[in-house]
Image (cartoon, rainbow, N blue to C red; front, side, top):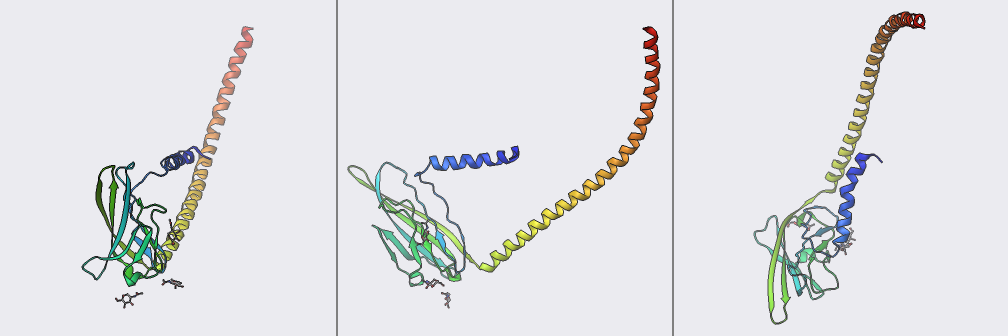
Amino acid sequence: MSAVQELLLLPLALLVLQASLCHGACVEVDSDTEAVADGGFKLGCISCKMRGEVRATASVKWYFKALDEANFTEFYNYGKYNDNIIDPRFTGRLFWNGSKQTEDLQDGSIFIINVTFNDSGTYMCKFSRTLNYSNFQFITNSNKTFFMKVVPQITRGLASILSEVMMYVTIIGLQVWLVVEMIYCYRKISAAGEEALRESAAEYLAIASESKDNCAGVQVAE
Ligand SMILES: *[C@@H]1O[C@H](CO)[C@@H](O)[C@H](O)[C@H]1NC(C)=O
Ligand SMILES: *[C@@H]1O[C@H](CO)[C@@H](O)[C@H](O)[C@H]1NC(C)=O
Ligand SMILES: *[C@@H]1O[C@H](CO)[C@@H](O)[C@H](O)[C@H]1NC(C)=O
């Protein structure tokens, strides 16, 4: 492995290390925003509890506004280990992907299957959290809104095939250019080399004859 490769891998290794050290810590990652038609898609929504040590319970409501709609309508909710799909457009297509085996929800993500173009639109998730302090309760709410676009399968396939072809063309092109450059340089160097050889041969002869004189001088001195 070259030094450059090692240098590139170092931050990655640190990242993995950090991720494993921070395991269990809550990070509010934004949702992806591009789904592929007929596929599955995770509608991400994470709301971290500000006071990690305080016990809490939370419920999540999801709202949807289609491209041709003016208002949000609730289509799904989750709380107390139960989920409800309210909107018939999503019947049988939504699955809880959030925090499991706890009422103290921090991940309110859901998974949608058989994505259709009609699923394009604005999604909003609302967390309602009750913090249980020893002698009082405190309720907090948080919202996340994002736009999700559904793209056809073929576009992505075509785009990736095209980019792959472009990658090979670029690699082969660069190598051909490299070979041409090498041949050109080799010729130039060998031409220059012959010239230099001739020159140095002449030089050598001159030096040799000179040193012969010197040696003669040395020998004389002995
Ligand atoms: C999702 O698509 C699969 C395969 O096309 C089909 O068998 C299934 O019934 C669909 N589910 C829903 C809820 O539409
Ligand atoms: C989310 O739910 C879907 C459907 O149940 C499942 O296939 C997928 O593995 C889940 N993903 C996560 C991260 O829990
Ligand atoms: C998408 O919406 C249009 C108009 O509302 C409707 O005619 C069509 O059946 C819907 N398609 C799917 C796959 O639900």
